[in-house]
Length: 97
Image (cartoon, rainbow, N blue to C red; front, side, top):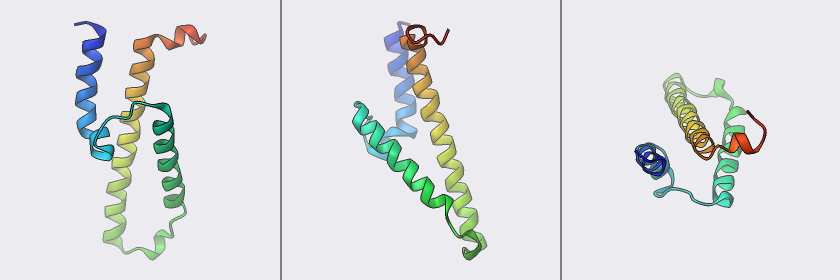
């Protein structure tokens, strides 16, 4: 299977569980990707300052499940990005051999 075809097939699998859920279509430009990542960081900074002691137990458990999902989505995005960097052999051009 050619690299292009492998990339497209793999991306389709990821897009269902990540990109299409959040944005309804894949991001294809750096400005949008950077803005979304910045927004996620800002939101997580806000969550980090949460006064958890004021939240009922059941709600804390629900939040814990949501944050676990966030962590998995971040990991999936990192794997996707790393795969693209590897496919393009970017590490060779930037001395990361």
